[in-house]
Structure formats: structure tokens, C-alpha cells
Amino acid sequence: MILIQEHPLVGQLVNAIGAEHVLRAPDLMAAYVVDWTGRYCGDALCVVRPGTVEQVSSILHTCNIAGVGVVPQGGNTGLVGGSVPAPGSGAVVLSLTRLNSMGPVDPVTGQVSVGAGVTLAALNAHAKAAGWVFGVDLAARDSATIGGMVATNAGGIHVVGNGMMRKQVLGIEAVLATGEVIRSMSGLAKNNTGYDLTQLLCGSEGTLGVITEVSLQLIRPRDTELIIAGCDSVEAALMIASRFAGRLAAAEIMDRGGIDSVSRVTGITVPFPTPFHVLVEVTGGVSADSLEDLEHVTLAMDARDRENYWALRERITEAMAVECTGVSHKLDISVPLADLDTVYREITTYLDQPGVRDVVLFGHLMDGNFHVFFTTDTDGSHEEALDIAVLELVAAHGGSISAEHGVGHMKADHLHLSRSAGEISAMRGIKAALDPKGILNPGVLFTH
Ligand code: FAD
Ligand code: MLT
Ligand code: ZN
Image (cartoon, rainbow, N blue to C red):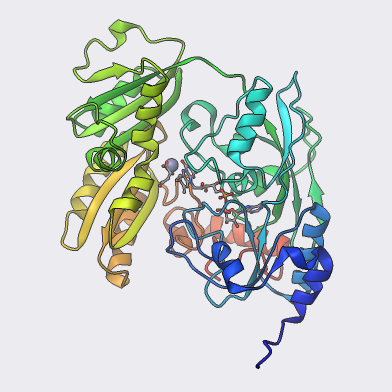
């Protein structure tokens, strides 16, 4: 029998956190090395599941000395390949899911500190039990973790009302590549004493430090009305949502392909025969006359309506995964609102070509954020050229190649389309300062 020569690092990691939480067997590692979309599948030296910040520190210190890559992982629901190791990387996947403790909600300030491995759903339940709610929500709520959401600066359906993840973050405890722990969890409303390391780590996608605990600002729940309307263009959808500007809790758009796919998969009836549907959640009440000029519009009358209307939007990703064959392409772009209608037309016109199927655009309307989905038969260089052409089209409108999902491995080659050479150089300088051996999430954000 040929004994696989264990990498000496594995023994050190077992000593650090115990054999039970160091996975080596391929079948035990399988779920940790393939991403949610299935498009990114790598291999790991091992998977480690620390239970304390001290264990995270010891793991990073050991890997840094050994010069072995570390891929931080939360719920593994990321959509740009950032949560799994690259093929042949031999990296260690560091799962934060065991860091799932939650502190008490401060009844006066609405602040709460939670472990990085706490899921969004668990936080929501914890906040609700204390009479508060969390400002960011997204369909992956049952698996996505707070640490992952901070690391990707997640967006979701309430950005128009509450901002992105970074706006909810008050403080962070994290471990740097050397194993050093930094902690800014004072909860102070004001603390102007140098660089804001908390905000620097928001959106850093596991490349600057491993987040172990987060201090969050919760908000008071607000009564809202949910409107679903049908319309003929993106421009018309913007006009409908804009009439509630300043009172919007959510404003989402679905084109015909996406909403029909959800209807086929779930059996939920599509309300209107129009090319687009817009879902608008409004605080402060909705007067009948504010909708009387719309031919296709209805208010959610009860919880079931709300559930169905949100399913028509939130289950598009799932429905496309169920119905579509071939290679799935998922882009997450944003452009200035004034360009949104034009960009929709340019993208759909460009993708109307042989070999491209299932073109669906949907997303967060008032964030100027479209999720672009389509399928091709193969996954070759021609097909990647389709993605690049769409990203170049977006960049030509001053848009972003990644609105909310991050860069990951998927868009590292195209960062220049949204960031200047000077910015990329400055970001590389920060990366080199905090992770001089480049062990944190190699290949994510920067190609080398
Ligand atoms: P993972 O996928 O595990 O990791 C994501 C990135 O964060 C990786 O680079 C990883 O290295 C890093 N990371 C994870 N944990 C840590 C940590 N503790 N410290 C440092 N780095 C860490 N995203 C949106 O923004 N808006 C949406 O509306 C949205 N909807 C979604 C719907 C579905 C059905 C799915 C599957 C995904 C959706 N996402 C959305 C994408 C995804 O849920 C978010 O990116 C989420 O923030 C990822 O959290 P996670 O815990 O799964 O992180
Ligand atoms: C969404 O808004 O549904 C998500 O970002 C998921 C996706 O883009 O597929
Ligand atoms: Zn989204």
C-alpha cells in the first residue's frame, strides 16, 4: 500500500485544533471545494474548521510560516468562485461556520456582535426576537454567513433603503495572515483615530484577513406595502419605482424569461402579460391615486401574496439552474440609472446570437444592478469572449463589472475594466503590506 506522504502542515494543524476538525478525505472535503454554481471546483490540502479566534490565529500563523494558501469560507454561496481553492493550489480551506455565537442585542442602540459563521437567517431570527431587524437581506439567507457577507460587502434586496453590508458594520475582529488578531468592537459611535481597518476589510473577499466576529447595527422594523406592476420597458419600471423615491425599501425588476421560468418551476401565476415586472416595497403607505395611471398593477393583500411576489423575483436563480442545460453564465453588473434602459437593450441585442440561449436579466432596479444570465453549449474561449464583451459594454457606460457579488476568481482578469491602474496598484500595495507572502485567498481579486 502506498502511504500518501502527509504534508507536515497537516500534523501541525491537527495539533492546533484537533483531528476532528481537520478534514483530509476527499469525500469529506467535496462540499468545501466546489462553489454554489458548480463552475469553480478546486482541490485542497485539507479543510480546517476552527472553533475559536485563537485557533484561527494558530492556523494562519502555521500556514504563513509554511507559505501555504488559505481560503476563508463561510456558507459557500458566493457566485464568483472566491470561496473555493483554485485547481492544483494545495491550499487549506478555512471554514468559519463553527464561529456561530451571537451576543445580546443592545435594547437601546440596537447593536449586536455575532460570530463570522452565523447565518443571515439565524441573525434575522435573533434580531426579530429582540424587536429589531437586520438591514441586508438576500435569497441565500439560510446558508450565507455574516463573515462572508462582510467579506463580499453583500447587497441584496434592501440596498435602496438600507445600503450595502458595509453600512451595517460597526466593528470587526479579524486575524491577519501572520496570525495577529485585530479587534475594533468598541461599539463607540465616534472613533476617529487613524485608518478605518473595519471598512477596509469589508469587501476584501478573504484577501486581507479572516473575519472572526462582527459588530452590527440593527434597525427597527417598518410597515411596508408591496406593489407588483407590469410594464413595457426598463425605463417604465424606473418611472414606477421613482414615484416612491425616498420611501423605497426595495425595488426589483424581472424580465419575461426569468419570471416565466419561476412560474413553470413553482406554479406561481405571473400577474401580467407584460415584458417586465417591477416589485416595489414602500414605507409610509400607498395612496390609490398614486397607482391609478398604471394598467397593470396590484398591491399584495396578504402574506401569501407577498410570499408569491417575492418568490417570482428571488427564485429566478434557482429556476434557471433547474431549467437550463449547457454552461451557465452569470454576470452581476451596475450602470448609472440613466443608462439602464439603453444597457438592457444593448446587452440583449448583443446576446441575441447563435449559440446563446436562455438570456434573462433581472435584479435590483434602483441600484442600477442587473444580473445577466445566459447559457451556451460549451465553455470555450469564444464563450468567455461573450462575458468579456458584456463587461466591456458595461464599462463603456461607466458601469461596474461587479455590482455586489465581488470579483473572486471569475473577474480578476477584468478588474481593469472598472478600476484604474493607479487604484489597482494601491490595492496591490495594501495586499502586500497585510499579506506579504500572499497566502490569503490566492488568485482572488488579483490574478497573481
Ligand atoms: P462564501 O461564499 O463562503 O465566501 C464568499 C467570499 O468571502 C470568499 O471570497 C471567501 O473567501 C470570503 N469569506 C467568507 N467568509 C469569510 C470570513 N469570515 N473572513 C474573510 N473572508 C471570508 N449576493 C449579494 O450580494 N446579493 C444578493 O442578492 C445575493 N443573492 C444570492 C442568491 C442566491 C440564491 C445565492 C446562491 C447567492 C446570492 N448572493 C447574493 C451571493 C452570496 O450569497 C453572497 O456573496 C454572500 O455574501 C456570501 O456569503 P457566504 O458566507 O456564503 O460566503
Ligand atoms: C439575486 O439578486 O438574486 C442574487 O444576486 C443572485 C443572482 O444574482 O443569481
Ligand atoms: Zn442580487
